[in-house]
Amino acid sequence: MTGYGALAEVYEWLISDAKLAPAESAASFDDVLGLLPSDAHVLDCSCGTGQLAVGLAGRGIQVVATDASDAMVRRTAELSEEFGASVRTVRASWEELPEHFEDGTFDMVFCVGNSLHHAEGARGRGAALESMSRLLRRGGRLVLTSRTWELVRSRGSRLDISDRLVRRNGRDAVVVYRWEIAPRWEEEHHIEIAIAQVDATGSVAVHSELLSCWPYRHEELEAELHRAGLRTEASTFDGAAENYLVVASKA
Image (cartoon, rainbow, N blue to C red; front, side, top):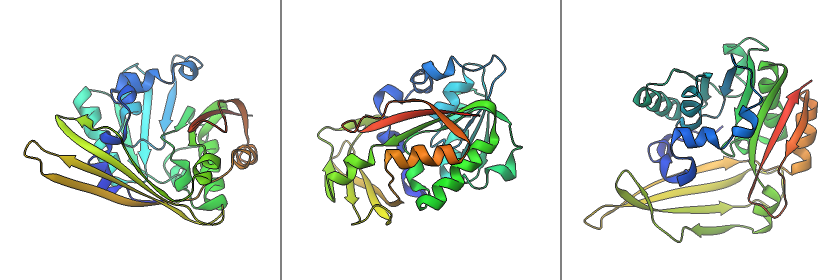
């Protein structure tokens, strides 16, 4: 897993306007949240800066938020305090989750924000999905979002510079992605993300981080979910779309 140490402090510039507010972040998953029992226990195991976890807690759902990044967990705790939300935060990688929670603890596990590609290759993804599956009760669901890596790889190595300023907390920034696409699918790829903040005087402060990722095909993910004891109930996969969502239930 990668650290998200530098980016954690400016991560809100990477979140879309539509999901920046915790309530709106939770609302984007209304379809699956309607499947939860009234006394649901939910795990957000790639919590980032906490928008989803805090939004879920705001609905009265019992929420635990975990992330492999200490900085992300800290920011989630800070957001929870800001909104007066009851969210338990734990720093844990996916593989470490069973050390913190008993099997069958949760009714739903979220692994969103296109995070699974940070698991190291097929072995790492399999271990991560197995951990998530173990923590689900029978009939519980994993909700996962992913980049469409078939599309990402087809574009090759490149530099993507946002065509507009993003305003957060009264400051503007330009977001830049630099993609290093390896020759083969199974090799380590890299994404360097830079957030160039511009202040009122015109000065620029750049926060950047080089992140490792291991892409996968949609059909590989489907097979790995099945091996982890999960059955796909719904998928929005479209080879022409940038991202997709998968909902898989534990048999």
